[in-house]
Amino acid sequence: MSVDIKNLTLGEIDFFENTTGRAIATLGDSGAFMGKPLAVLVYLFKHREDSNFSLNDAMNWSTTQATDYLGFGDEVDEESDEGKAERSLTSEQK
Image 1 (cartoon, helix red, strand yellow):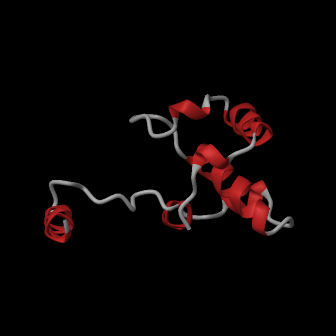
Image 2: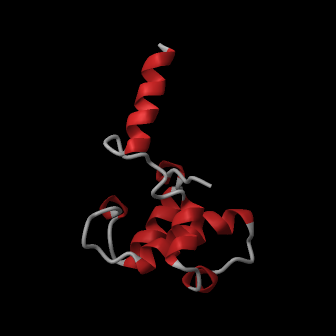
Image 3: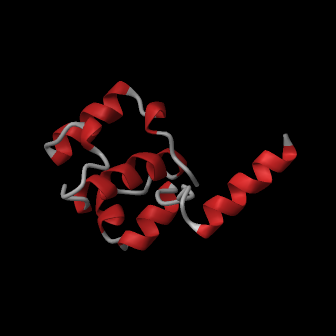
């Protein structure tokens, strides 16, 4: 699953900000705490699928589970071999 933060409702954004004590706009800031923000995001999106899923359930997920579920890190680095190959394929298709 790849989530789009823009799809959060205002109420969900408020819940995120009040629960984590930080603005949602700070997601991805280097050096920022990530445990609780990741857990809250997992909770918000997973709770849409399963109303019995709790914030405590999300807090028990590993970082790998959370980032995989949220689709974080799926972006291809343009300078990596994979990124160069992807860019090459894209330009060949034009």
